[in-house]
Image (cartoon, rainbow, N blue to C red):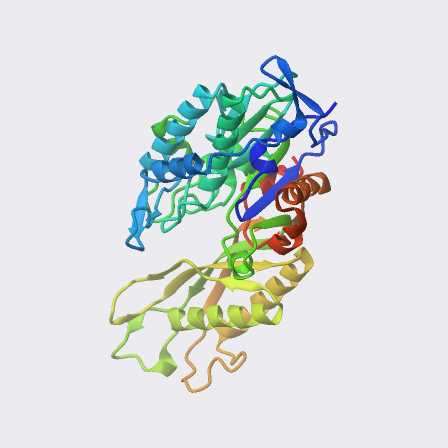
Length: 439
């Protein structure tokens, strides 16, 4: 006996899909039976596949909920406004409340765990773990309307289609809103799904403090907005049979090739660090270059060198946060901290790149001319450098059954044009589905 796949996964027409399947449950066929129970009577499977999402309704949900946590305007259109809905903010609470109310109206049982992860489960004819569509409603400080949001809203639209057509699935289906996927406010990305997967201790996650010096912890903010749930944040408390994630690509490959769907086979490895460079404060007018221990100049050389070395390794290195002290126009900074995000296709290459970066940063801090970074300037006095690993994420591969499910769905939709309109991909960005692979 086979089970129905959520229709949004079988008939998705957006640009990027990511799928995982759990390994600790009995295999479940991802196909449609020749006849499916429909409101107490039998309906041919062919009729079932004629069902479609209501794209206008889906986009209405996306734009309506984007009213909570609006960011900067980037164009003249009505919806040309970005997002700034940080995790566990008041705006995030509004979007969460909408998600809970809407899914309950569609017949779902809603559970909230100790990390605020919200699971909307539509019962099936048989019990057991649900097949979920999942993503997140929090955004970056200057985010867009589709990153994460699309995956949740598409899942809700799936529930609407099932509900309005009285489709009765064999096993439960549902939608998940994961907490703080971005890691923008609380600095571990995918932290709540990481707790669910048993990869991050609950206490560590609860004690994470918001960036920017606000001082609030995740637990405090979960309590404040009313989303510190009673259920354990654990795959044992809320098991998942399979997890599908519809997501924008966040890159140019599909658009540049005029393709519609990327079938994601895995995610590249990445590691986040905080690098601290320490020198000595001094006056900009009374201290010559040769006597300066300039932490800012040294950090700048390190950031440039990380770009060059990552290019050599066919990898990526980026700095998104930089702070310095004391922060005065006429004072050479004595302390600089910067983030370093390093990504590459496999774990071994990432670790080799990290080894080289650490060795070269030591040389740069000592004042050595690494790769011509000192050319045209004056050598000053040495600085020190310290590394702190904030977050590691190993490269992963997704379950072939889920990959095949998306490939077959694309074939059924695009027919002879499937190879023209789709492509296999490795995700450059991490997402909550990464956490569901091995749990």
